[in-house]
Length: 254
Image (cartoon, rainbow, N blue to C red; front, top):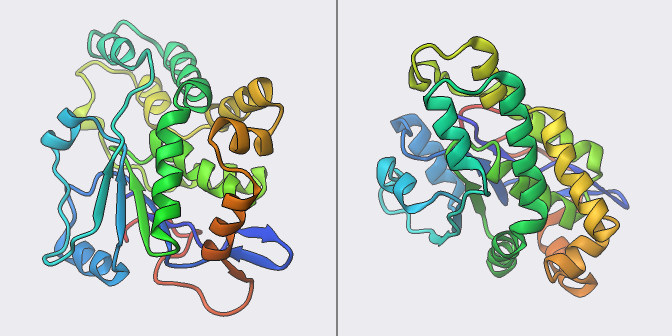
């Protein structure tokens, strides 16, 4: 699974993101019994689900018996995804075309989908430091940018945010059997990989539209200094002590 803790990342002033409070994942529909036991130990308070209704119906989340996290459904696709998927099914798109399409999606996440990511931050804010998980289908794109937004809000440096994004490459599911017959390896790689150019396109979009992360958070997402300070009080800690069950440097099974 593409499941990991967002704890342990530096935020300056001798602090880091708190362990055991923020998690990112792909679909929770295929958890094993061992996975379920580990997820149960996280005591999730809230789950933010970026999947559309038909995606949720196809692979319903499987949660531990007795777990009752609040679920915030923020299902969306950026413009161009249906067309890209149709071209992929019909073998009408090459690796370069996939890269152009996905890069465009990341540019749109930052600017055209501010309302969705504002709702995500509001859900994290309401959780007030209680364990929260964000996820989509693969945990790479909608969730990848969502995790970047949360880490931006907490003051994690951009270079570290990119490193977290790229950890997805260490734990991608084998989805070769789900790709259309005849799909080339280069197309499958472009479709499933987390590439620096993708997340950097989102940062470039933020810089162009807002001049930088601070104004993006304040004016694009409605999180000015007071709200950010409250988030940081709940979700950062002194950079000492032990790690949690899930290390941010160990992507993979929960």
